[in-house]
Length: 427
Image 1 (cartoon, rainbow, N blue to C red):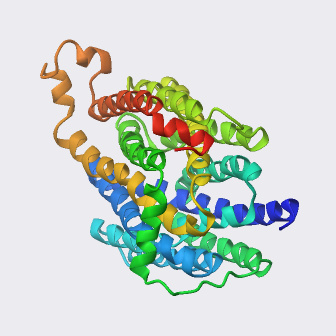
Image 2 (cartoon, rainbow, N blue to C red; image 1 turned 135 degrees about the horizontal axis):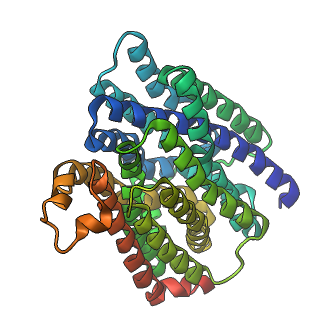
């Protein structure tokens, strides 16, 4: 068995590479959101770019999970990170040649997303390779801290760079971070024995085995399906927060808000990394999701930077507790040799909610829940007085409703017996 201390050091090196990658991706994400909204003035355009930056990776994550169990997981991570730079480079080249069009941005983010699909299942399966069960929640906290960097560190850097330069600089930095990540992954790979996989089974058969790993225990399957409802709610705040804030403020304020909000995720992720969760995973999952829903609803309530910052901080601070609990419940109930393909399928099923939210949120904000709807009395009672009126109030109202849906989902989740049995691996 590997020395736990040495294995965790290898994980930290791998994690550092992913931290750098997350910061670079955050620069591009922030820059493109501001650029597209400033050019079009449409939340639906921002949502379209967000959808295309996400959906290819999601749809390809299941076959990528099979590859993660069949081939070298670290090599797949290197390929995924490095080739993702192609899409970003395409957008940068188009910008250098003149004013980039929306379809070119969409094509670039689609290419980048498609290649990045190789990363997530291989990364999660590698964590299982490196660590023991006692280290899982600690690692989960650190992984989420790295993920929060795209919301915490990237907006501050991007806001400063957009003042000094323009979006092309953000894209160039992002391209460079891909290669930093690849190098750190190769270093970790050189110190690990490579697993030899007997390819006796077909690709389709292994894909089916992955489904069997997810559906073998009813609680795991229910948890994954419920996760899709969770991501549906969260997808609204991810897509609409930028248009909501930019409707009454500027990109500098947006960067400040996102940084303050994401610091909540960083703070709680660090806490989990230092003091890992050891019991009560289902209860922790449900309570943290319920609180997240409340804070999300408050986030969309008014055009107040102070209120948005406070509620955003609290919203993000709840997510690592939910994610760590969800991760543990699933990881400890799936065999290690099926982890890659299982995580690929879990990614597809659980994140279908994001696809639905990205597809619907912008259209609803631009064409259904418009400012005139709140001003003209089409909504019952005094909704306009509660939520205010203005260009971003339709997006605020949608975020409020999504928050309430998240609260309802958390209550349902806590009362599912098969999920509660997973804590003792009896589901």
